[in-house]
Length: 434
Image (cartoon, rainbow, N blue to C red):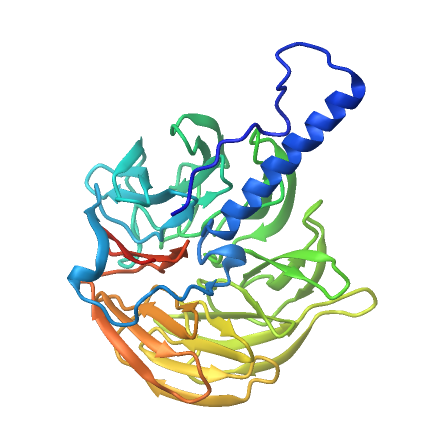
């Protein structure tokens, strides 16, 4: 069981106006900060705070999730108010999920207890009706959490809204409108939290940019222009850490290829441009010191592109490409010296991320929009028909199990504190745990 920890934030005055002696004040401040940081780090380690979990890697070492189950094995199942394609996110004992109503163009964010699935608070936002791709929804963007707030985005041709809500109460802390989003397919990217920033992408058919906002106030920290008039991209950034310790915000799009940006000011540190000619929908992932991305259209990817990031005195370069059975929407997942590449039409490839050598390629069947996650020594992925396929995370193919959720799904599982949370269009499931 996890607890929702409420400790004083280190930025807040805890002395009620009194002026203590300097040594006592410094000692108290250090104690409060250490306690807050320790609790926050513990909660984050037990959490799944963004799309595909910590750094978007889709990784969990949990050993308490079954590979085969029945209805009786769920901790709880709840019906959601509305429908959607977004994925659950978790911090401590709080789970956040979004839904939408196509008839009223309403978006809704719901915070629920991980213990029983009951709603703790919910907020609805009326928006403008607009055209969507048949596999998009009014709730395709996955929120991001930092233990204090939930960060939620949506976009229409008239607005692109980033809103911060208190994780305890749902009260709105701030809201920013980045202007209309132009794409015939609709919006589908998701925010991330990195250090003290909320980072969002606006890669659309108009003037595009990557933007960092102060997560406390919503004020702009930096803005990295990305031109305009190209194909809309839906990928969610991740962070690459070089052997030197230098970090970069990784994003990819048709116009810019795979890029690494300075997280302090948004400057482009390196870029492998001209590697994509089609649309980027899935998200970048880091494995074996390389950054992987794909692009495609019509349900097929062009190639899995592996880029060796640039460093001081060296430009980024393409290490290799794998063209057969490359995905369009689905993000790969790594484990040890293996990368599992899941094609939208149900063909899975296991390759060595260091050099692209293929260990196996097998058809598991079905159509997919959600991405795989690695849990212990197994890979889980939900098909659009609601079948959870479980594979052995190994260099020899093994189909371990197939489990039916009973409804269509476009989401990716979340794993936190030994439990897995599965989302279909209108239902939410909790599975596993001690």
